[in-house]
Image 1 (spheres, rainbow, N blue to C red):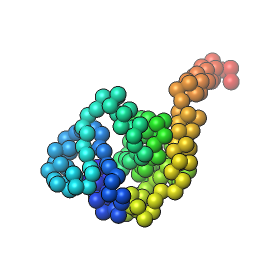
Image 2: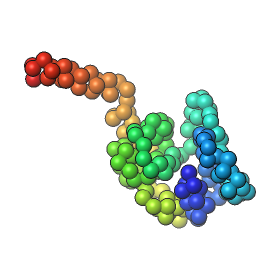
Image 3: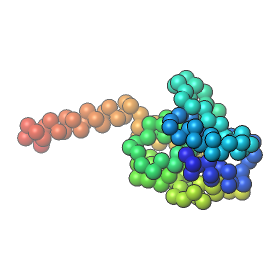
Image 4: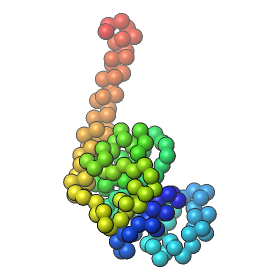
Length: 167
């Protein structure tokens, strides 16, 4: 999270833009103390733990989903954000590359400078509407539960048939 906040503070960005951080954890108090008044002056808000309904309200007003996770499995929050049409801006790690294709349905970054550049108003994100539609399309085509269920049934059926020597 420090990574995202530092890039946000360094970027020559739209001063009316807001960075909302959803979630809580042991680092939250330390971060609010460390950044102090910089948070409010730079439109950074820590929202803490929210229930699903409140998260949906935030996603409906947001344009982007940002994550600097170094490693994780397939991110449910990434898929959820894309299902709302948010443009993902995520760290270039294999798990995210499985979902996000750079400049097609979102953005991948490797360094803090890359993230800062993406936040910068000088480098206004191109094709925002197209990226949003592509993000939504990716989730619908590849991660819809009905599609996954069909693929899962097929894989299980194949395993059963192989174990019975029928394939």
